[in-house]
Length: 195
Image 1 (cartoon, rainbow, N blue to C red):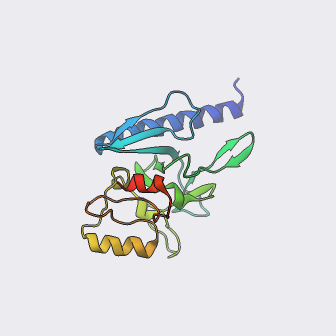
Image 2: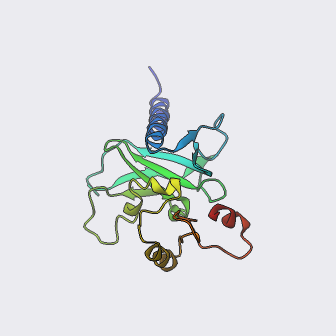
Image 3: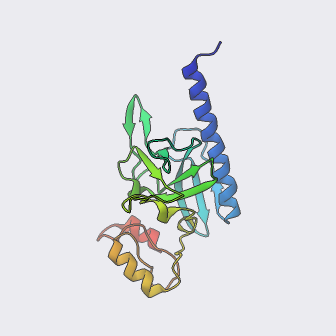
């Protein structure tokens, strides 16, 4: 008879692999090229490319239904454990976390800055009564972020929204969503992403 903890680990690994396969398929359907790094030593699961844009994506998932305590919330663990300690992904390691609600076939493409130091995120695809809840709903099916595109048609409205939110702006002379945080003086990496 197998050890219950090893069975649970194997189920977790299998579900993670299923989520990665689902991501590969969906990204390809969206016109995004995907590459898997060799081995498991990188903090990201996939590299994605759309035109000349290259990003690192960590895939996370849940295949369980919400609990009775919060019947609308799907919980997705967004941290990882290294030597028994919870570790959070940083901007230097990952650009986006693609979270998959497997029982609903719903994706959230969340910039790593929006996750911060949360161990888990709660997703509400059916909405939530509390107006403060559902803070990640703007990233539901946000595949345009991996393409560097904005869902907003008006450039001036997008610039105003980006400036007000402090998390994005239009690049000058293009119709592509530029970066995920305001440019800082001397930040050549952010400037390169903007081009």
